[in-house]
Image 1 (cartoon, each protein chain N blue to C red):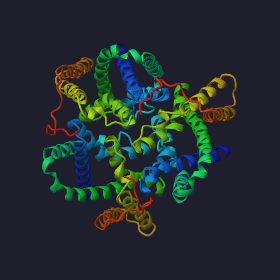
Image 2: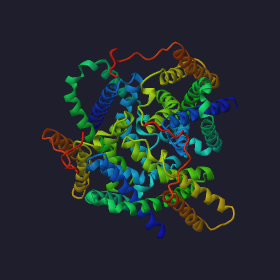
Image 3: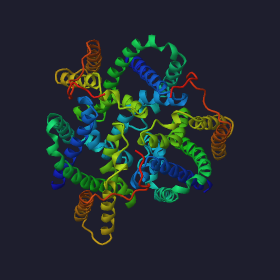
Image 4: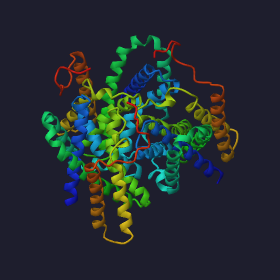
Length: 205
Length: 205
Length: 205
């Protein structure tokens, strides 16, 4: 129940963030809706396809479809006053990747996959909606370029499997793993921590 | 039989349109062939993957493969005299999305999916070949930016499920739904109707 | 055994080439890792999805995951001295597409697909990792624009099915098909042979 509410909040956050970026690209209403959708369900869809869970999750739960349509519509309506939302949006988005990571790991475990693969599935669930969004908007995916984002998901996943050696109760471990993801991202954003750059300082352009 | 002929015409139209756009990007013959393929089968492939119909449709029907190779070759050969074809191409393409929408809805129904999801599957079948084509050509997908295109597919799908409340004969309903798609698109193109813009008039470049 | 070693060498070559291109785009370490992964397993993943082999191959063989992580790390560490590697990289890459083509054909045969589709699967396995890599890096895929690359894979596949009419021993045929791919690509690169251009000489820009 708790998980479902947070899952919905995450979906709403991703859907709104997709709609905002699509409007930035001056897409028409249909484009905004599709980018909103892809951002919210893209990562989970890719995970389900690769594991072989078909029809993919969102096609079996019509609630999510309506939530996404509603979120995209909401973003379109308040598009001129969205800035006051951006801060809570960042929080939703962060909660969202925390939960999506956990959902992805769990899906991998149910399919009997190796822990490393499960962590990859968790990270993919959380991050690839954004990757597809940026690719369809003709941008290099932002998570390949900056911010602690995927790294937070990976750390959360590693935490889960390390703790699994010592504890049995998966529900608690899922909550802890999700909190690790959220904490790492919030701390990194607060203190502007990013991955070490591979390149010399004098960046061109 | 009638459906198969129209399906083939739609495939030919999509394959030719893909080849034309690939040649616009100065791709080599292999690139032209692949973009042609992706445009013609991309939407249906994505639909089959997400529903779990595998191997995907075109891999089980070699005719389509040869038709696409033939269409791409034809487009390459007559590439300097293609303009006289463009008008019939638009018609084929419109017939194509009408039929592809119906095929997508039917595939969704067979898989026992919710009507809203079926409409999404129909729209995806008709539109995502073009989305993949534009993404591979490094463009923002054209259907996210202009024209009544996906909207026609959605309206056709809604018509189908509304009429299904009152009538039983699916074959007739499919024909009506397809005709709605085609009519909406033709009328919109004729009178230059597009979705309402979300943006103020003074467009920056 | 022999095949597994060459398969690993191919994976290493693809992973390194992906990492190099990602660093060219100034991606952060996570981006480099993902592009490396996508380049190495993207073609096989798409093939498995379309045929319906799920979970996809690399998710069932953790060795490949570690090999790719290792290769990407290696590429990052020696990034300033990579030029001396480029020649052997080209060789690995060529061996890689030879083997990947054969693996793809074999997967198609096991799934009972038509020879033409099997050749398409072989070519997809060898080439689409690079296509996805370039798309995520916001470039038009290089194999659509130049070089004998996919063409070599197609010729290898055709050779395989032509010889299959006359000989029975599939293992030998696989080796021959792989060698055809490798030879065609090496000869084309050596003598700068490319597909005939569809366009007039005076290229704009």
